[in-house]
Length: 158
Length: 232
Image (cartoon, rainbow over all chains, first blue to last red; front, side, top):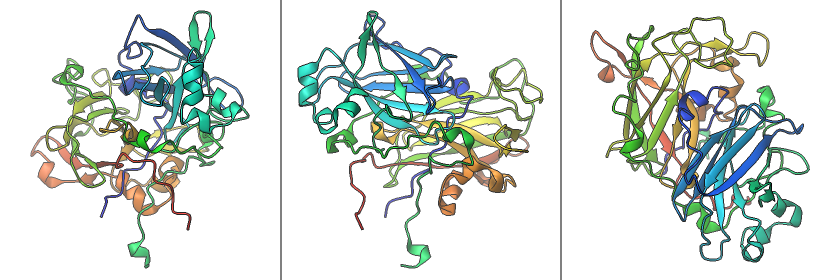
């Protein structure tokens, strides 16, 4: 019989003490620059959130807290495609007020064909798909995360 | 089935309006089920290089010793088949003995302790065992509702083998009178599951004339998130 798993609790407002003691957000300093804002249901920036990204193909991991404007950023090599999957990063969102982290994915705008074939993206309607694809902006890739609302980012069961 | 035989529901209710900050932050649309093989995605592996030799001991990070009740917190990181997870990165953070975090946002008028930063990390050994030496953190007030106080707790962050085994949680101390008033603790629906977040006092881990011992095991999921819920 399997053991009951330990329940999740929020990271709370003071997670930087334990989790952001040093910068972990540039696994590849010469890689692509991903920037985004974490937003609540009123569209207000969440200044005490944290994003972790993971490239399971290239084994790159990164973590970024959000700043006073709710902003997070990474420099990471663009992941390779794997099988039918378009290049993407797996990601977790953590925040005060979020009792369990939320899982999502970051896809790339210059991979239209691969994105078209991607089993996950192709299972979503256009509006949902759009929440998972970063967009080009000023030489960087912008990936905003909306926790709620019309444009809520697609989150996955964990 | 009798009540004793029902499986423990270990889910936290992300929509816990009594915890006010959930209202604008917890996603309202149901989560999407990922394609099955995503469940087995391996997670990041952290090596010894990340962890300093004394990072497990929060009482030896400064010139002097922190004030408070010195404690040992130890346990195993397991998967839900009971298998130990070795090399798991465990990160902890907490308030000091007076209930104050070393963080600019924390305005609780309790003293900071120059000898306590409140952060530690370690990797589990071959038996999945982690071990920290720290001080027992204090309860502290928060602005959630009138006269709101958090029960004493240590924040834990754990990476398993699979990406989907990631866990961030809080470890509580036995017998805390604040449990029943704390919407974060109560956000775990099944009272039996709340018990899984409470450490046990353990005389066998207690060091004579030195520190009280607490044990607390962390159980991560199987790494599979793709099993649809039983439609019944």
